[in-house]
Amino acid sequence: MNFARDVVGKLPGYELGLVSISAEGERREWTFGEIGDRSARVGGTLLSAGIGRGDVVATFAGNRPEWVFAMVACWRIGAAVLPCNEQLRPNELAKRLEIAHARAVFCDERNLDTVEASGFDGLVFVVPDNSLYQGPPAPAVDLAADELALVAFTSGTSGEPKIVRHGQRYLAGQRVQAEHWYGARGGDLCWCTAPSGWSLSTRNAFVAPWLRGAAALVHDSRFDPEERLEVAARERVQVLCMAPTEYRAIAARTELPRLPVLRHAVAAGESLNAEIVGAWRDQVGIEIRDGYGQTETGALTGMPIGRPVRPGSMGRPLPGYRVWVEDGELCVDPATVATMMLGVSPDTWRTGDRVHGDDDGYLWFEGRTDDLIISSGYRIGPSEVESALASHPAVHEAVAVAAPDEIRGAVVRAVVVVRPGFEAGEALAADLQAHVKTVTAPYKYPRLVDFVDALPKTASGKIKRADLRAFAS
Image (cartoon, rainbow, N blue to C red):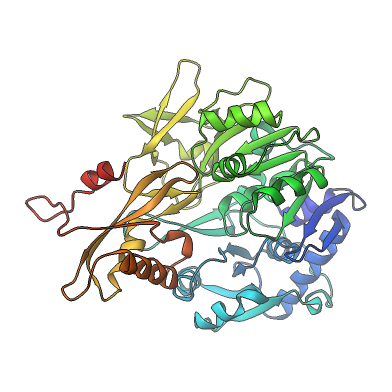
């Protein structure tokens, strides 16, 4: 199998495959033929630089066409891709590149300073650069289903982010969710707004649309509610995929217009509340279909197409997937998602998410079974925030927990014990927030900071996180 050859290469070369809008507002259309040629030539550049089958190439760029071409180029020659979030700090990027054994980085010119500060000593391709397309096109290689295609990282409740590996079957396996939840059709223009470092964007920015013969839109811009609606209307987007936080923020900050061309909308990354489903249905004229998945598994559930939306539910298991609730936790049979997961034992995969099901097989998200914080779709391990806080000279002890938030679902709340000689207060809270942003990706910083004389602990000295979470709510 080879995604570049078997999907991109078999779509009509004259048909629209990609619409790109730059940060400066420059718009361009790309046919599937142009996408195939550009990615093949980037693949040739990689081969000439000594990058080939089995090597890992990182992307550290925005939602721009060069990111798409680099991804497809890697799959064409049998290299794997590690998409990285642009918000990563040098130390975080360095750890990911080291753990994944990356040999090259495709870097947006605006992120070059971060790559250089990370100490990465491999090949760096700065985009945009037309010289990447000057060489001969690379041939598409035959790849086994379990050869590495994607590398990702996901936050845990302790220690460093965990590496996740997906085989080539992961790409073809997206056809199930593309048809039964994402809802792309031939001739559609689909827009998945997730940043290029998210696993959701890896699945749905262009892979899912192209598997269904649809075109994709990539917009290299920060989230702005009014601009989001304006672009969707102007570009005549038929399928829209956003995080629940984005749907909530748009509804809260601007008047929702009718979007008559939009026929399908989906959400993933965090729980979507019923009130927002109702607001978009009543004002925009579209029902948002929630879905659920993990970085480790890919999409697992979705609100079925052709059936009425049940607001607040994350849908039913996708066709062919064995998903069930055991002791209140969502569980998965890895064998039924073999197209997704590499290096996972055949035993039950426990997701760590508390879920309940109804009599009709619809699933309803309740929360995490552990201390992971999900904010605006980002999965944030408390230890990452706590380590950043602990590196500040004023902090004696610190704990990070989730606090409910109307727009983001949850935010990070830091509970801090201050060292002698430092004064707790608004000034120190602001300084701690700024410090965390310099040490780790800004989306992890604590939006709430509380100071206490001592943290609640058990007799053995373990922090009572449940007490702090209860206080935060």
